[in-house]
Image (cartoon, rainbow, N blue to C red; front, side, top):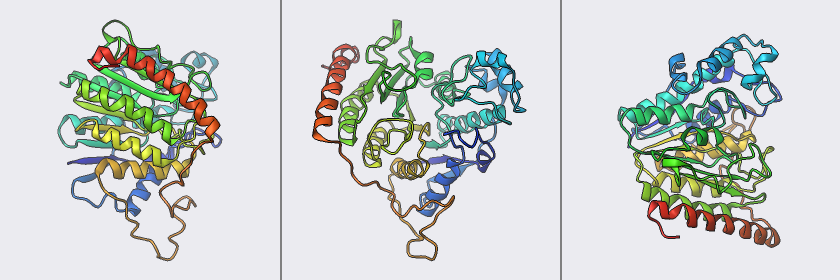
Length: 378
């Protein structure tokens, strides 16, 4: 096993705004907590510092017109014509260095991609990546560049026959879906809060691809108040059989943590216990995995969850070497991380019944419409 954690403190120098929920500095907090718990102290693990991507890599997916617009905003100034590109909105504000930040995000993801393609690593995690809403010619949903699409396209161009993309962010990965909706080279699986109650309003179960791609887009919308028990059940019924049937060369996983019950932007009720169970399943899905951070807006919860995810991806147990030492209760950015795991949480029986009924209906549709395309019985 060879693993690479992609990190640079340069992410700390960028901010989308004091009140904006997306915080690039959480990568440093994840790095520090992984260090505290000995999760880099293994011979097969390396920490790799990325460089910004060249502009031509962004052009492997995004339109040149959009790239030029984003570059023009790099000084932190813009005019109203930029709204055409999704720039200058509340979700995607223009800030000083927005273009440089986008190139650094892309550079981090592509560094991990190259590690996998060159055989330097089979397990990679880039916390500031997974910007799954970015469009061909526009920014949206906190995403200025779609690093995921570019990484998958690079894998396919460089010899991988099939890539499985799995997205466990609470928001539907619409930008990635749009890019691969008509191909059978990418199996897209997104499990998310339904579009009736959450941005981006897409990702319904009947969005299953078209043309050669019919059956290669799989969307599992979830109702509000979905908890660990339901989420893990749904994931196990969808991901393992499809992953086995598809037999990908690599899994690209967007492992956002805005599914947690304390997240301020979503309405699911997971704890990181359910999240860890899902990460175990993803780990078993392929011998090669590129994990990208994505969303998550309760920062302490995200940092603990991604630390656990890195441990799972490497098959190791976190051990706090600082426990009992003076000042051990306070760790970085004023946050206390004495406990990595959440307390269990289960919604009421009345809510559970409603949630179960909703997901059973969606699961039945997927098994009837998608599973047979992959040689699976419904």
